[in-house]
Structure formats: structure tokens, C-alpha cells
Length: 238
Image (cartoon, rainbow, N blue to C red; front, side):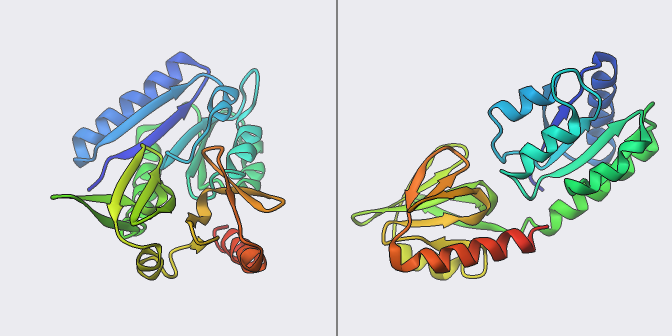
């Protein structure tokens, strides 16, 4: 069971602390590990957002950027993260559907409703846990979640795996990785790159713009197929 990465976006310190306390209780009662990051406004989360989170617990009414607006920005970069709105205003629930929110919990947050939503989220995440790959780096084997891989790069006889946490170097070929990751939403954009469509935030002329800010060249013969694959991925991830 891997650690679940959770972001809490809440401008009320008392409510933020309650959510942290509830997560600690959940860890204790259900033997689940969390890593938790706190943000006191949607703007702070969006500023340098990368798709590193499994779950976002997000307040809606905040001073600088409300939760709905923050979620719209996040969905441009991350179609998979589970969003749960924490709100005192139930009229916002319909807006949550626009950003594919899983659900919303009304304040004051009750433990039972909170624990049920977290369980539902973890169950959905567990179904995706097969989405990983075993990487051999020398004498060591490392399991890497596919969602954490931004792209593979071929340099001579070495494959550089660019992940959210850094880079891994392995021996092999892009062709081998392309075969291993068939039907896993990776696309060979040119002879040097195998990109994770999850991390493509846009296409600018002949480049794919990645979630880490890098621009990777798309070969001209592959561009049409690349755009088709990206469109299908976005449509299927909703």
C-alpha cells in the first residue's frame, strides 16, 4: 500500500487543523499512510502546481482565489487528482461538476462523512495502483508510478526517465518501453521522446508543453497522430 498524497486548501486555520486531525485519525484506524501539504488559498496551490497529489480537500470560499476557480486551473494540468470540496455553501455543489469534483462535504465537517469520502477516494486510487512500472537501475529495482513519469528520453544507449521527483538512468531502448507501456497513455512523439499524455498541458507549434514547463519536439510525421492520441486521452479521462 503506497502513501497517499493529500493537499488541504483551506483559509480557516481551525478547519484546516480539523482536517489534519481527521487524516491522522484515519491513518491510525485504517492503517493508511498519508503525506499532507497545507495551502491557505487556492492561488498558493495553483501557483506552482504539478500533478503530484492523489486527493485535494479544497475549501470553496477563499479570499484571493476560490476553490472552483483553483480547480479549473488544476484541471488544465491534472485530469486525475480527486477533488473533494469542503464548504459551508451547498449551492456551490453544481459548480463542482464542472471541474469533475468527486463530492463535497458540508461544514462543520463530521468525522463519519469525512472518513467515508476518504475511503471512497482511496478505493478509486487503489484501482489505479497497477499503473506502475518496475525500473532496474544497476543492482536495484525501483517501482515507479506511471502518473509520476513525465517522459522518457533516449540519449545514445541510455534512457533517462524524467519523473516528478527527479531523473533515473537505465539501459534500454525507447522501443522496449513503448511496447511495455502500450495502452497506458504514453506516446512516442519523436525518436528521442516517449511522453506521458497525462503531463501534456498543451501543444505549441511543433512542441508538446509538459507539466514541468519543458517543451519537447514532436516530429512532423507524428504530429497528427499525437494530437489524436492527446484528444482521446483527454476525452477518456473525464
